[in-house]
Length: 373
Image 1 (cartoon, rainbow, N blue to C red):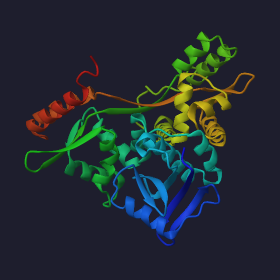
Image 2 (tube, one colour):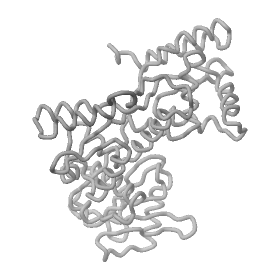
Image 3 (spheres, one colour):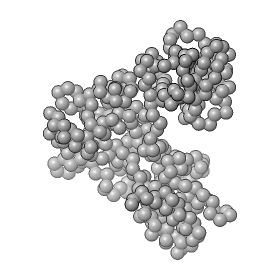
């Protein structure tokens, strides 16, 4: 393991600020901090750079989502950078998120000793930006419309979006980025002058019953199995009217289901909440077990569980303070075959060229071939 670690933030007004370091006696010069910045100056993605300065062997990590933050490890003489690269990247992710989200609870010592890491954002998490950006969610709904969706000229979409939000200050390229990054949409030139936007994935955010966790509780004959199943049933299918049903058709933009969709995405966008949800999808855990399962500090785990409970995602059940999913927040994607009749109508009515429709079918085949076989 590295001999030390320190966190540096680049401030526009004050230059480099050392936010945290371990051990506390670590001495860092301005020259070393400048070298760190120089090493990463041309970086455009998550990366770790290895170099030597002032007799120290340094592994310096940064990522494009937080370009002003640097997590720097001081390597021991016998450590091979390429052997420990992946672990340092995972530790760098964890430390960066903790430094930004909960700086008062950042304790570098235990992370360094235990080698705690954080994985990359999952494919499911890439969809969260769609629903946490209202204009992007609106654009997705337009492309998912059974009468008008599927594909559309970028210029026409831009005009439609400006009319919807009553603003001329809209940059379609920025709004469509979360859709492109997640693979839900592709933007391509068709012919010499038509830039087209194609819906590749129908994206759906909702709460599902925690099926796998329920099965494991019953298979392992846990004492709270009956109570757990009852609480899940009351949430999704209570006696009389009510309950959570994401399959109901929604027209009202202020519908509680649409509001809930945004909240689900915001929670899943938080890497700490998401790690705990991932663990609880499999089976219930107590706090200590969750700390071991997620490699997150116990304070982070406890704080996340409170937020998940307040949003009807997790419950504290049983006599030993075991935590289980009440509802399983998910973002799934499907082939948008329901828009194909709309595409055919657009071709017939000469709203789009046949060439664009053929390109759309080819893109769908490339994405989904073999997925549903």
